Length: 79
Image 1 (cartoon, rainbow, N blue to C red):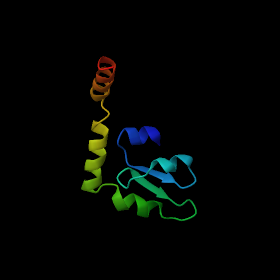
Image 2: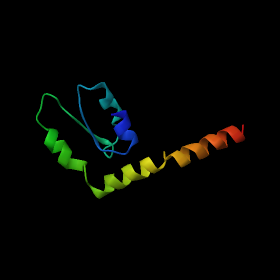
Image 3: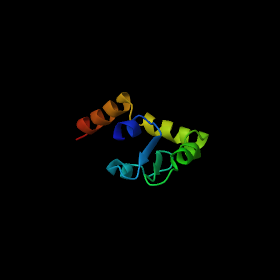
Image 4: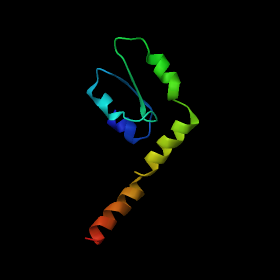
């Protein structure tokens, strides 16, 4: 789940999974009830809406290797 979120993927996670706590925003994914058959309902709700696709892409762009390296260099050189 953590790796999928880091890659900007929409995550569907059961409420029985501890990692479901990582899904805090609707654009990150959905948590479905393991005791209820709402898996496909959750999948269709936000998965491909343009608004959430854009948010996921913007989030992922913050953590490209170039951006991470720039941040580390900035911290190391300015301290």
